[in-house]
Image 1 (cartoon, helix red, strand yellow):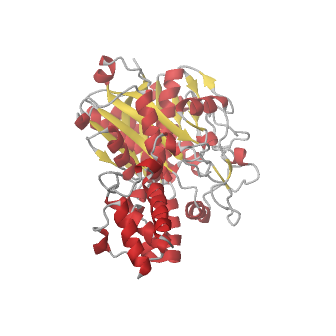
Image 2 (image 1 turned 90 degrees about the vertical axis):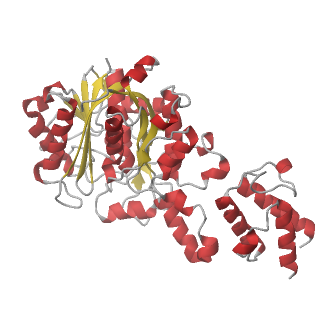
Image 3 (image 1 turned 120 degrees about the vertical axis):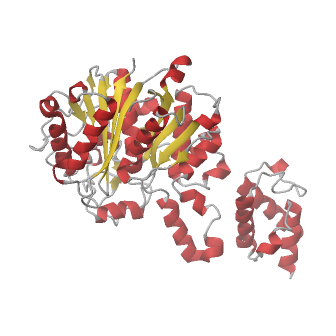
Length: 81
Length: 412
C-alpha cells in the first residue's frame, strides 16, 4: 500500500465517520476543533482505522493523532513496521 | 389537581398510521389499520410474523446523517416527534429555558441496537465489536436528553418507565409538575421501537401476541370474541403541555385542557390485571377526583383495549366506575388501528383524546365484528363518529400492574 493509497483511504474513513465534505477533509484538519469530533467520535474513528488497516492503536497513542495528517503518518509507520 | 391550569398546545405523532400529525389523524378518522407483515427482520421462525411498523421514516429530515447511527430508532422517533410537536405548537425557541422540560419515556428502550451489538461483540470481540456510542444509543433517558440538547430545554429531564403505561405516566407527571409550578412548558409522552427478534420473540413466548398472520389488518380486534392477543407496534406520541395563562397570552391554539391524572398499582401479578380490575377502577376514580369532575361528565374513553383477555376486565372496571353512565359514554380502542406501541402508546392515545375533543370526532374501534358478550359497551364500532364531547379519559395499564389514567377537557 503506497502513501497516497493510505492517505486516500484515511480521508475516506474520516469523511464517512464524521460526515464531512471532501473539500473540508484535508491533512491539516484537526479532528476535534475543525471537524467537530467529540471524544466518542474519536474512539469510533480510531476503531474504524484499526479495523480497516488491521492494526492496533493503543489508547495512549491516540492523543498524538490530532489531525488527518497525523493519522496518515501514524498508519504509514505502523504498516511498514 | 388544584394549582395552575395546563393546556395541550401541540402534538407530535409517529405510528404505523403515518409519520406526522395529519397522516395519523386522517387514518384514525378513516378507520385504517397500520398493521402488516414484519419486514424489519426475518420473522419466519416466529409464531407471530406481523407488527405495526412505521413506514417511510427518514431520520435525516431531523437528525444529521453521522448522528443517526449513534442512537437507536426509539430516540430518532422521539427527536422527530418532538420537532413536530414544537412546530405544531408554534413554540419557537424557549424564552426561559430553565422553565422548559422533557418527560419522555420508553418501556423497553434500545433493544435492536443491543441485539446487534451483542452479535458484533461475539463476532469481533469487545474492542471492535462495541461502539463507543452503544450506551448512549440504547439508554432510555437519552430520548428526553437528545430532545433537551436540540431545543435547549434546561428544566426537569427524565424518563418514567412503566411498561405500557409509560407514555401516560410521563404526561401525567409533567401535567402535575406544571400545575404545581415546577415548569411552564413540558414535552411529554412515550417512544418505542422494538420490532426486533428478541422483543417480538419475547412477547410471543408469553403467548401475548396475536398469531393472525394471514390477516394482519384484522389482527388487532379489541373487545371481540375472536381476539387472540395484542399486535406489537412502534412509534412515538408526544404532547406539548403548557401553563394555561402562558398559552392564552401568546394566543396559542389549545387542543384541550389536561385536568386530571392518577397512578395506581395492582400489587397483584407480574402480567395479569387484578380481579375486577381493582387497580384500574381506583385509577379512573382518582383521576376524576384529581380533575374535580363527576363520572357523568365523561363522554369518551380511549381504552387501553389491547385485544387480549384484559379487554373484558377493563370493560368491567369501566362499568364499576361509571355505573349507569357506562352505557351512555363512548369507548374506543384505537389500538385496533395503530396496534400496541408499548411505552409510546399512552402518549399517542393521550394526543388522540386531545384531538378528538378539538375536532369533535371520536376515532373508532375497527374489526369489531363479533363483540365478546363480556364486552358490551358502545365501542364506536368500525367508523369514526362526529360528536362533540366535553370530557375524555385515557386508560393505560402496564405489566407489573401499573396503571395510569388521564382526564382531558374541551378547551374553553
